[in-house]
Image 1 (cartoon, rainbow, N blue to C red):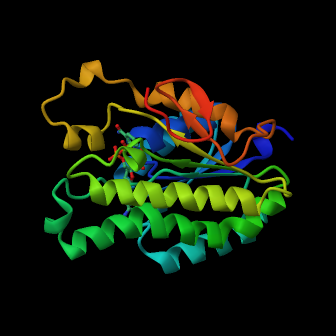
Image 2: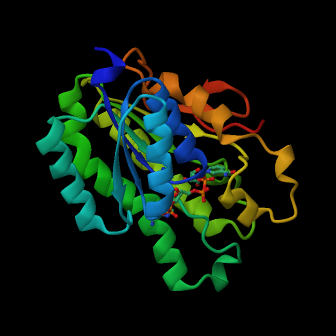
Length: 244
Ligand code: NAP
């Protein structure tokens, strides 16, 4: 199967890591279905993808609009009958504050975007990924999932839940053509990082494009590992997070 026949959904494709992965896939000739809320940024991505000689389909949508995720699965089925790649990348940091002070609304929003949306996408896309014959899934996680740092509890709990869900889905698809990986970028020069570490000099932080290049092999039909973690800071495949 050549890349030209492959269809990829990337969530959070409007900027940062998701945008870099979308461009890397397009450079490989894959048709990218790019999802995020910011239409203008998606249109700029579309221009860049066309300039690479590839094609994209834009999905301006909030991943917390769960009915829209069901409709997206139906639309992909109607147009292509399958999905080859799903990158669950869209995420929010949420509040950095003691757990006892976290606002209920903020907690629920982080869980909706970082966890429930990815579950709803698994639910909506599973038949399409199986139909691919070589469905490749990557969820973007964080070492916050195991570090248990003070004030990072909401985000950490969401990424730990995402990892548990991804490993379970990997186990459930073990005897199919689908592989499911989690990928930890480490610190990346994006808006989310600037929000978390406002005093940091961005020039000292690795670029999302470098991570995206390393993710591409995980999204190819030749990839065979499933249920494992790719850790970019150590450039290693691991079973679980380990301190660097
Ligand atoms: P970012 O620059 O803030 O980008 C986040 C992306 O997610 C944007 O495209 C945003 O698009 C999209 N998004 C957020 N909420 C959404 C929603 N409700 N519906 C649809 N799309 C939504 O952050 P990033 O650093 O690239 O983060 C990408 C992933 O990497 C996240 O899962 C994050 O947890 C993870 N990560 C980042 C770092 C880091 O240092 N940067 C480290 C570890 C893990 P719109 O705003 O246009 O909707």
